Amino acid sequence: MELEQWVNKTLGSEQVALRALSGDAGFRRYFRTEVAGRRLIVMDAAADHGSCAPFARMARLLEAGGLHVPHVEAWQEERGWMILSDLGEQTFLDVLNSDNADALFGAAIDALVRLQQQPAPADLPRYDAALLRRELDLFPAWYLERHLGMTIDASLAALLDALFDTLVTQALQQPQVLVHRDYMPRNLMVSEPNPGVLDFQDAVLGPVSYDPVSLFRDAFISWPEERVAGWLTTYWERARAAGVPVPASLEAFLRACDLMGAQRHIKVIGIFARIRHRDSKPHYLADVPRFITYLQGAAARRPELAALSELIERVWPEVAA
Image 1: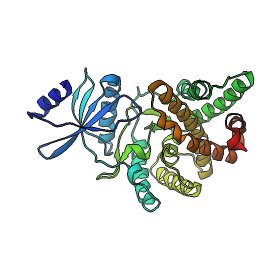
Image 2 (image 1 turned 180 degrees about the vertical axis):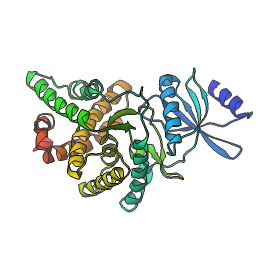
Image 3 (image 1 turned 90 degrees about the vertical axis):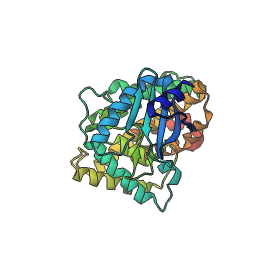
Image 4 (image 1 turned 45 degrees about the vertical axis):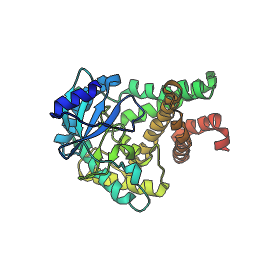
């Protein structure tokens, strides 16, 4: 195996054993190994080697900013292979429960505030209108048409356009900061210092509420709304004290979170449908009801999301009833 040969040569070992780890929704593969008592992660991104340069760049930036991220020990750029420091075996998602959530989310909030304090490189991609709209368009293309078999007639197209215009506009009006773009319990490792932060290669300059919403209204675990509101309040207080440009009032921030969350939840439903039909990974769709619940809550709280309420009635009438 060429990957093993490269790892052996790079680490100066004759026989390095690679133990496969569970992958993600993408095309990267991960292995754990141990050399001279030191545990390391080997990443094989040969099928997605273009993601390695952004990963290495952001790893350096975040590490310099005091975040606990994988250190790039070695990189075979042409093949998409990396050797990384090992941040541990348990994600926050593995261990979160109602008793430890305040402590774990407190650490996650502190790390997120530190991340958002980092100056974004001038050439970092922006979460602009085109990107926001491309993400939203995954929902009608992959979920409505491909998964549900719906026909998008003129009235439904008009409804989607009105909703998407509202969501894109509000996102662009928010203060812009460095955005991890997938800051959720599955990408936070239980480590020392806590947390270890993973999967940041798609970072952009974008809305300040995006990562807090990703953290507390997660794809794979849900919390009572009063606890979510409490954590969002804690984040807002700490971010404001640290000089992160959050909205001046808590209510304005919570409104931004609801509207930004609606954009993310609609996008992720589309992504999960695409993973099902393009990549033959059906299990992600089991979490779609979680997103419907998030969308219902946001629509109930925000009159400006009347189009979202109508969309829920048309797509999921049994839920709306």
